[in-house]
Image (cartoon, rainbow over all chains, first blue to last red; front, side, top):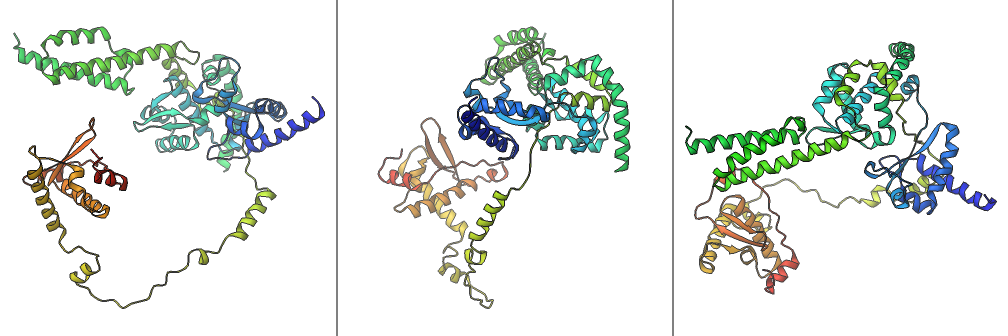
Length: 210
Length: 275
């Protein structure tokens, strides 16, 4: 890349970083057309370079296409303009780290169960069914509070018939295929269970300390 | 042997039960494959020759309509089953049931990529905020106190309020009754079918008077002195007075019908362009 071009891309990357890291609207993330307007038609290239830089920090630029219609081939600029872009973690969090960012094990496990259940029900499930499912392992008073919290955070949405759906945050943060695959894969469960014991013990100790 | 009347009754009940079940399926309370489409069609076919009344035929078409929705749900289910995201819900439920909290957490952490956001003030934004603050006019200048003189409390009479135009010169109920009489007379004089075009009744020489008449008309309808007849296709609205006030409407769930009484419409009505 020539020096001048490199300079242009460096400046565009800075602008993209500001736009993506700082919340500009009620919901986080930036629409493609906003990036298009601010960075020019070559904004996908800018995001590609930014994504490459973020690799070292274990972060990534995540693209969520409109109505979950991920294009089979290389997305067109039109499709990208309609998509929303976020910065998310690239790798996995450990349970301790998850706790550090404000999640209790119970709440996060409840979220996992809820999302998996809704996916298995073709993307929608009656709230009552989810409450029943969570109620098997969480105290009754907590179930409703947790579901309302998931809705408030944007992981779920509820319609007037009390049906729950996956919302924008789940689409941005959760790899649905990976979640189901991990849940169904016996191997993952065995290895994870062994790892899990120590972590769970230590995190429970920490919770007691609080 | 069942009489034809009894057969019809039993047929109607059967169709109603089928509709209820299909509604449960549409509301995702029941698995769409619980319904045997062939047997439903058999029932529909069995009773169809007996239907004569409009409501019976409506019931029959309602069954077909819901059946189409259920078949659509079944086809969606099959389509979803062929995608990579499909998982047998029973298998998944079993897995969820067996998994401990910690295990579930580990699984989720393997698929969860939380968003990253920053919240931070910059010197630029602070400086811009300071500039804004400096240019902001103080509240006492933006919202000056109203110069209101304090007066002693006193009493007033109805006549005084009428003079100050706080109240009208008639009691509202009297005014409404008189207005109702006017409507009845106009309808008698102008039409043989007991109704009058809405605008022909509320329209007056001035726009203000028209709005006032529209306001009173709304009470005539709300209090059961008259009713509206709306012809949606022709976009015509008629007002039809009752001979006696219909008190039943007061106890029924009412619906609001917005009618635009705009200056433009009033001008059109004056020119005779508003049909």
